[in-house]
Image (cartoon, rainbow over the protein chains, first blue to last red):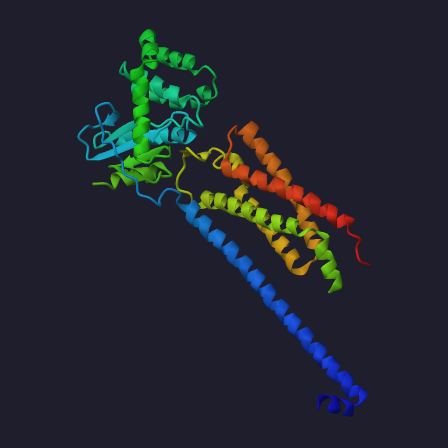
Length: 244
Length: 154
């Protein structure tokens, strides 16, 4: 039937028919290719959109996924500032060699002055051993000065001179010179600096930080609950002042 | 149609795949740093990521534009160009992307120098970016090589 009818067609008609079939095949291919292209680029757009969405979620609030609570309550062995029967307690886990902690140092200091009557401030050591080689010895130095009643003075000196001692090989000498500047007894300072008691204290602080899931410094706990690090003095002030 | 097929064979498939994957990793990395720059609330030193000394230093922005954002756009451009090449088979796009990786590599070298000798601190995500841009640069050399070895159709 098809053969018969095709034979009845003129040469021109046969040509037209073949051309139409060819065009149809071509159209089909083109359509197919268009679908593939649309699929490819939609996939790409979706992937990029997904990544952007993901990083905004991750980068926006890196530590807010989990609520962490302070495990160890304030003890007599803690270094505190402010009033003892305060209703608001701010605990800081800090590393003397951490530049971010140094940035927070003047902020926290100003807070301790402004809220001296209403807030209790606690400093706990959390030396990041793996990235700060001198952090632990700095903590020992502050503790040793504390044995002579000058913990906070040494704490301030250490932060203020962070750039100086951070890169030193023999950091003990520098801390001894700070002790001298503060009028401390050098022999006692050195003995305390190397004592098991002082070193255990720092380790205990570190362990309590680990128990409270601290993994970066500074980490602040306001009334036992971890807070996002405020970005300015005003922000910090509002956070503390806003508490009952 | 025939010339398209020819040119898509000019560059080995694995290079194209590697190019797109690595540029995508670089994009995710730089985009994370950008998001952190604009939205990040915490400023700290972390056990696993080191300190934010680098990303908060004066070198982290150029005229107010965070370098991370420039990096993210760079990787995105490379990625889109690679996909466009995969789609159209147009060698020019791929050659453009390959030459562009030289710029990315040089920028990365400069940033690594800043981290090592000026800021004297390293940032993990910046190092990832250094490795991705170096890998793209090396792959880019292969792309350029295969572009030249290909006898161009008249």
